[in-house]
Image 1 (spheres, one colour):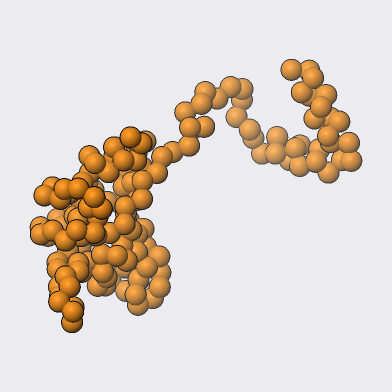
Image 2 (cartoon, rainbow, N blue to C red; image 1 turned 180 degrees about the vertical axis):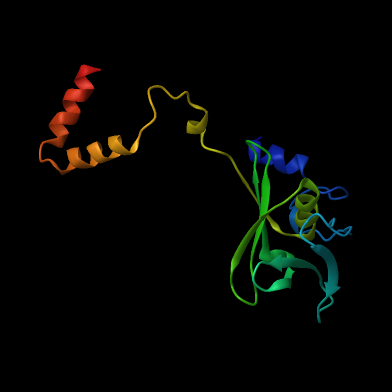
Length: 160
């Protein structure tokens, strides 16, 4: 079982079992006020299919009404942080905000798409040597402008 599958099983909304749990309608509590005055409720369309309505706050337009399918959740499995994002239906501004675990559970139970990602492994690698400064960058740029920069690079590699 992949790390993503394990994460999704741990974060499956309570009361939802089996298969593609993100699209299963469940009863939801109101999202707590700490989540930028957002709440989730169910409404019915003409065909009597139930879908979730999410109220979110756009930084330029204020409170807007969205469907759960137009809100996306991003969760980092490396450090456990989560965000949600949406495109404002009024001004088309892409908005990205932090999400607490209860907001993640409520939005995923409402049917929002959950994207699980991890930080690159290079961040955990040990760093050796001094940090690169502005002068080093200028020297590198100047070296790349010379016609024999590949030979200079080869000499540097042989010296190691």
